[in-house]
Each structure stands twice: as C-alpha cells, then as structure tokens.
Image 1 (cartoon, rainbow, N blue to C red):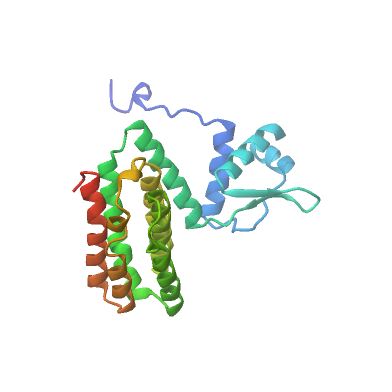
Image 2: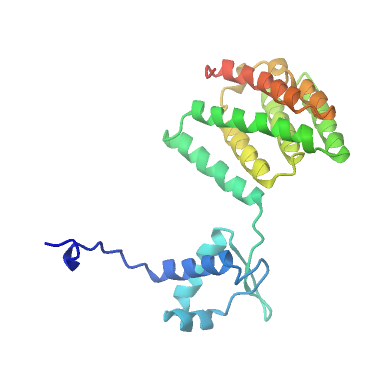
Length: 239
C-alpha cells in the first residue's frame, strides 16, 4: 500500500460533547474572546451552539468551575463567568499533584527536595534584589515568629513554611510564589517524622537570609538559603 492510502491514515478519536464544550471555552479564554469577569452565554444558547442538551452544557460548565476556570452565581444577573486565575490557585493544584505523586511513588522525596532547593535559593536571591521596605517588615516579623523557641517541631515547621511564603512574596513574581509555595507545602505534608528534628537546626541560617535580603546582597542570600536547607538534606539523607 502507498503511504497516501486512506487505510494508513491515523484516526483521531472523536471528542465527547463535554470535551468539545470545555475545549471551546478554554480557547475563548486563551485567544482573549473572554476576559476575567466576562459572562458566558446562557445554557440554552450554548446548547444551541454545540447542538447538545442543556444538562450536557451544565455538566461541562460545572467541570470548568471545579477546575476554577469559571465562577457561578444565582439570580437574574447570575450565570457563569470567567474566573480570575491567580498563581495561588495554580500553586495549590501543583502542591496537590506533587503530594499525590509522592503518595503513589511516581515522584521521590529526593526529587522533590532537589526542586525545592533550586526554587528556594532562586527565591532568596530575587527577594534580595526586588524586596520593598514593606516586604522587609513582614520578613522580620516572620523571622521573629520562627525563632520563638522552644516550640514543638510541628509548630516550628509551620512557622518555617510561613517564612518561606513571605520570602517568596518579596520577589513579586507570581510564578515563584506559586511554585515555591507548592513544593514547600508538599514537603511539609510528607515530613511525618518531624518529632525527631531539632528545632534549632530547622531555623538555622534564616537570620542570615534576612540580613542578606536587607543588604540587597543576592549572592549572600542564596548562600544563606543553601546553608539553611542543607540541614534538611542531611536529615532526610538526600544530600
């Protein structure tokens, strides 16, 4: 048979009505036809557009709402609208995916930690270059909270996570905030043996990170963050 023989052509599976509706709405958002806050056509209008029943449209829109692409309200002026997509929302989804991967063992703790170190070191350097005075005030307050010892390991880890979030926000980069937060959250969820961790070691070098950020010294900030995370690498035998 020749290569142009129709029998040799790949056949793409026909998308379901739900997939067609969901794909179309996403395309409208991506190409700018719909902006955040814009209302979608009514269920009746969309049913006519796609040649399907209203319950099918309703189910497709509910799936998009569950994916946080749409919001919905009741009443005469209600209906479905395009949601404001924030990196906090994206970060929460990434954290959940990482946690599930760890649970299913399709991702190792060492791989997660490697990514977390790379992100947090980058965050520290960017924060030193881009922080504002308001960021510094929040960072100092968060550091003081972390260093309030003695405290149980669970509490210290929770405060440490909050510190890293404040530091990430000082970069003013939504992607760094979202992804650094996601890896830190997933890391926190799986640190089940925290009772054996020394609180003083968990908080080591954070004061150096803040001092470097205050001095706008990106190199020193990265170095201090590397030193801070080295203890966790050693503890979990990931160095």
